[in-house]
Image (cartoon, rainbow, N blue to C red; front, side, top):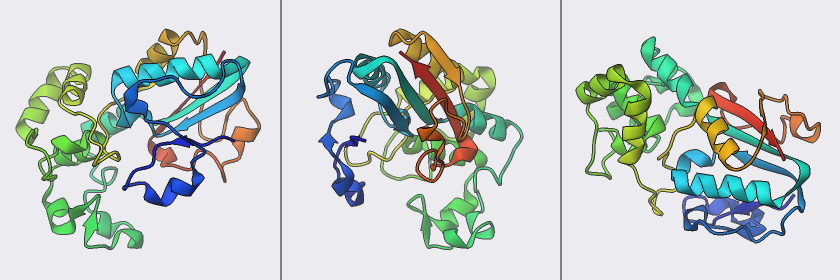
Length: 234
């Protein structure tokens, strides 16, 4: 495997794993030859970058893959969060995390003090997960969506609402961990088609067409309970 990533302060512990440093937001070609890769694996990346950057990296994946090469994308599924919001599922959003897991018994969670989290609305928590800078319980951005505005927008038109939320977010090199974009099956499939992939497959946890990628000790390790799994063959 050749590991492609971008070194920054937030992900400093991963620096020694990087073989190629590549800034997705610069929208440049990958420094890899065309038709040279057998498999490309992307996990929980696209939600951190703009649509234009996502289009670029998927097109680059198509370019570098060999014919019949495989791209596997593991991605937070915005529909999981929306469906949980619609049913008022407080546990899904971890609104009371210290009651659920001893691992979360900390003074802060998601960088937010526990007492603030306990007072947060479910709308605040949705934004904290999906469009973090817009959540009223995060203090490092002046644009906030309060609960009343969130309800008005999401109840009027779900897709229009999340597109609007995403439009208010921008990539911040000081916070590369923030989610600024959203994907579900339909949007990701559309982006893959735009990147020239014709054979797009809805997959699942540990169910890749590639035997290598079915090893869940090494792959699909990031929050499978909210992840979307899609594969595309060149």
